[in-house]
Image (cartoon, rainbow, N blue to C red):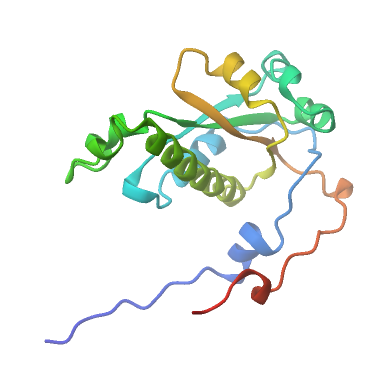
Amino acid sequence: MAVHVAEPKQLSSDALALLFNEARTHNAFVDKAVPEELLRRAVDLAKMGPTSANQSPLRVVFLRSKAAKQRLAPALMPGNLDKTLAAPVVAIAGYDLKFYEHLPFLMPHVDAKSWFSGNPEFAAHSAFQNGTLQVAYFLLALRAVGLDTGPMTGFDNAKIDAEFFAGTDVKSNVIINIGYGDYEKLFPRSPRFAFDQIAKFA
């Protein structure tokens, strides 16, 4: 019996441009509100990206008011302060150290929870790795729904955790400024490595 193999699907050049080739990291945004629906769509897209054992440690707090964003100020590096306070939306992307408590639901066909419970060092490492994977998916999802982003790691994680995640098992990972980028304030794209500087075949 013949086996049907589906033709591989590829994104259009326009889609690739939106996600990668022409997309830019923004430090300034135009004065335009970001609809909540787009943020919800981005999260729902990001959660579909692959992780090991279907782990879903990503946790996001969206800051939209001036008062909420001011709570970030003590934890930010000086160079990140003004642009973050001015961004229409700021997302704090964190990861849940107790992600494995949800594995009976997320991966019901195997006892994946037992791999991590009782092994906090392994669980924390896995939460960080897969949480960071999900941050990358989230950035692409935000671009996919028509938004621009400015991700940052220049902040005091302990201060962020104390202010926004106290009493939880969530740790901060990346802060993302979100909105509609001001293209007039972009500087030229920075260089990237060539393929051979990144990858090799063995």
